[in-house]
Image 1 (tube, rainbow, N blue to C red):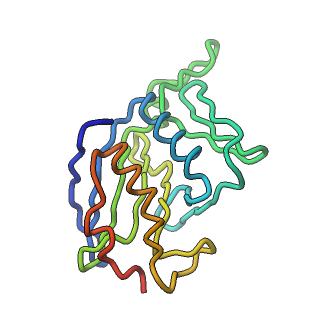
Image 2 (cartoon, rainbow, N blue to C red):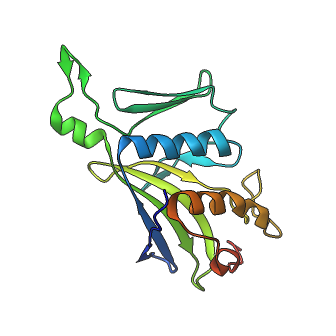
Amino acid sequence: MSTKIQPVISSRSGGGSSEIYVLPTDEEFLREILTYIFETYWQEIVFGPIIEGGAFEFRCPCSPLKITLFDGYLTVHFGGTHFHICIGENRGAPNNPTPIALRKHRRTSRAEIVRRLDKEGGANSWCLQLFNGHDEQLLSIFFANPFLTAQDGLAEQPDWSKLAMWEDIGQRYLGRELDGTDRASKGFR
């Protein structure tokens, strides 16, 4: 994407705010960004749905063996482990078509990259979120975070090299550069 996307600012309960960068939801774009993230950054991301009452935070067991698209569903294969996410038109079988209301419910209708800011305005979390036609979260992909260790602990000192993923995705899909906000937070301590 060559166009610069401007964020919408949203307040968060408990303090702080989020910058929300609204993305296209067409099948071609979603396939491209998801494939890029999983093929390029599989070792750095944490992913899964985050819903009220449950957070599913998974790491890729290996580089994806393949990423396929069939009947609107993108499937990321890691061997026996895989997941499906509806990013396009899910038509069903010719003798058993998917009802139109169910097609609309399943398909990604909202995609956004979110940069979460602490109470002082420093960034401390970066992610891609997808929502279906009923505005239910399908997937969150958390980007490499300088404030967290590979074992999901809090880092003693921020590892600013982990911002490389955010910088790449921000430039590639949002048309933006890193700014001082990305290094202004003290993390989660």
